[in-house]
Amino acid sequence: MDFELPPSLGIYGNETIAKDILSRIWGKRGVFTCTVANTRTSTIPGLSDAGDTPELTMFTGPADAELLINGRVSCMKGIPINPGGIPTPATLTMAALQLSGMPCFIVNGGCSIVPYVPYFDMGGECGDFITTGKAVKNVRTEFEKGVMLGRMLAKANDFVVISESCAGGTTTALAVMTAMGVVKENLVSSSSPNNPKELKTKVVNEALAAAGIKPGDMKDDPLGAIECVGDPMMPANIGIVCGAAPHVPVIVGGGTQMGAVIAGVMALHPELKGNFLQGTTRWLMDDANSSMRRIVDSITPDVPSVYVNVDYSGSPYEGLQAYEWGFIKEGVGCGGSSVGAIAMSAGRITAADLKDRVEEIYRGIMGEAVAP
Image 1 (spheres, rainbow, N blue to C red):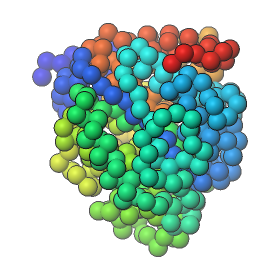
Image 2 (cartoon, one colour; image 1 turned 30 degrees about the vertical axis):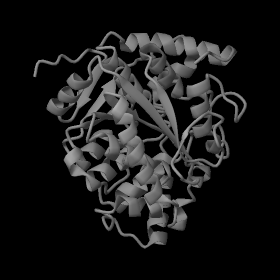
Image 3 (tube, rainbow, N blue to C red; image 1 turned 135 degrees about the vertical axis):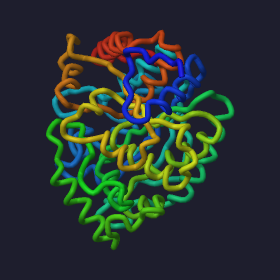
Image 4 (cartoon, helix red, strand yellow; image 1 turned 180 degrees about the horizontal axis):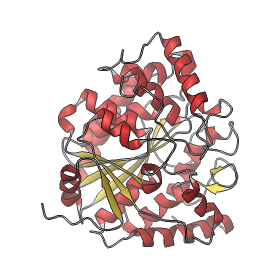
């Protein structure tokens, strides 16, 4: 294959599949979706940094949706930040969408606070604590509606990018991947450089015990695993991939929590390998406190990761430099939308262009709302 990868992108895993998919979407029309959802698991103190306080994590997904669609947040004051004032990764997603002109749709997987934007409703509800062993309602409905939505999006576009904003989602992903036997240890990341691994593992062990599940019991039943110990983002996104990927290539935008989505798709429809890849960031792939590489390797060698080489180390803003210090790393499809934007522009959009636009957006958000 003659496809030449631009320096803005890197590949981990099956390079042949990655280059084949990229060559088929190069210069083509993409569409971006972000599935927002809540799990009460995110409010366990110390578990999630995707919000300034545990309670505010319930606003993170809805606020990200409002920021993407409307350029400002209605459901809370300010924008979703980590403790210390580090901005939501939605800023990078906004940059990718603005530069590429890629359309963006919000999918409501199940929120406790409903975002003030138009969205596709998957019939989900806010997820419960996974320690109940009965974490998600309406899983089958969400999955089936996701399949329908995936088919709809594939009809009008050459490729589909999916993503998520669901605080606490790395813990629920660890629980689902453990239930499926995909991982045997805690490999998931955190939005903080101080990944609370012991707490996440403890919560996951309690959740599996409450559900009466031993690791590997749900190997062939990802939807059952989600019902017990997952979150409402997962069935919607698994459905969208299963609906779209038979027709067009799909970019699964996100970090380690999307491992549960990739594992779910492969368990239900292994024949889709070769038509979807993970789109993520260099920060996530290089994270010392997690291992996306090992998660992907343990699911299948045939779903490669394509990552964007955005670098904030030269940024004048400390809030952005913090990404280089191990904060945030991924979320709101910032990696997947960036990979999609570069592909849609046939490589004309670069990692440097994305950084420049993020700084513009960041200046605007910190001062005044920006136009979407």
